[in-house]
Amino acid sequence: MSTRSIGQEFVKGLWDENPVFRQLLGLCPTLAVTGWVINGLAMGLATSFVLIFSSLVVSSIKKFIPSQVRIASYIVIIATFVTIADRCMAAFFPLISKNLGPYIPLIVVNCIILGRQEAFSSRNSVGRSFIDALGMSSGFVLALLILSSIREVLGVGTFLGLQVMGTWFKPWIIMILPPGAFLTLGILLGIALHIERKTKARK
Amino acid sequence: MELVAIFVSAILINNFVLYYFLGICPFLGVSKKISSALSMGLAVTFVMTITAVVSWAINHWILIPHKLDYLQIVSFILVIASLVQLVEMFIRKMSPPLYQALGIYLPLITTNCSIMFLALLAALRNYSLAEAVAFGVGSGLGFTLAIILMAGIREQLDLADVPEPLKGAGIALIVAGIMALAFMGFIGMIK
Image (cartoon, rainbow over all chains, first blue to last red; front, side, top):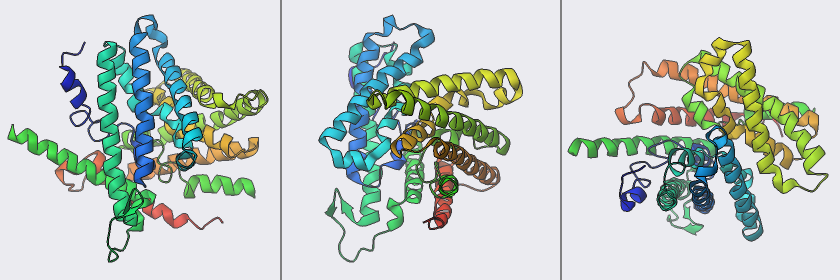
């Protein structure tokens, strides 16, 4: 059982245990869809939906799942919500759904979601699991937003499709291509670790 | 000819790691030594080839005739999970040293997104059985190539003077970025 207060349970997902910057989980979608802010945001929200609902279900039926088959059960629960998310995206936001393509079904193998079920929801109450899932999702969305903002602004000079850079700016096309994703995330990880060290040293 | 194009483009042009960003976790986790990178790559290639065949069969013989294609996600993930379990039992019986070397990353192939992506993309593009197999083998070899190159670079990188905060994952991602840049040179090889 976790001994943190409810507030701390939420906040830890934003920085201390941020799934992307601190735990290096879910890197594949993080790299793949962050060429445009709108795609990053859609991916973040779809993943949050799946994570929050899977956590709610797993934490409420944790007593009935035999521990030998728990991973398989979690995967079926997660796959159910991913199917719902996939179908809803295709119905209501066909354009975004087309852009993200097979990356939406791939949420099912996102290690953040399975990781939270195994590490948290299977041992904590429904309320706490909800707050934890909310915090982790916010951390994930935050990371996707940071990465996609940098890539879209530098890569094409726009933010959510709006022109933000002046006409003097020559876009760095490489930023929205695959190499830009690796380079940006690598440098961001370095910066995150640097900030972490600085704050530790001050304490 | 079509088969060769699918095969080559899966290895070099649309490389699973460097173009689609799939399987980043084992790519960063098992790329410290060339020997373990090679066995990881071969295990993934093996699972990918079988997955390509089995998911094709399920998709074309069960899901499509019964109009159940909305069950693709659930059924593919279950097939992959049971396949990995089988491969794991097989390797443990046949070659215990290899089993030891792969360790935790063997069961983790289940959540390696590249396998799931392979099954989904082959279904989406409506590949025939032969095309699906060419795609599966090619993608697996592409993954093997990328992870071995990465391991080779990282063995040299141990001797380099990397800034403290970038050590580990940071520099590995930057190296991957430069590799992706190099692989972009292959675009245009196949029209």
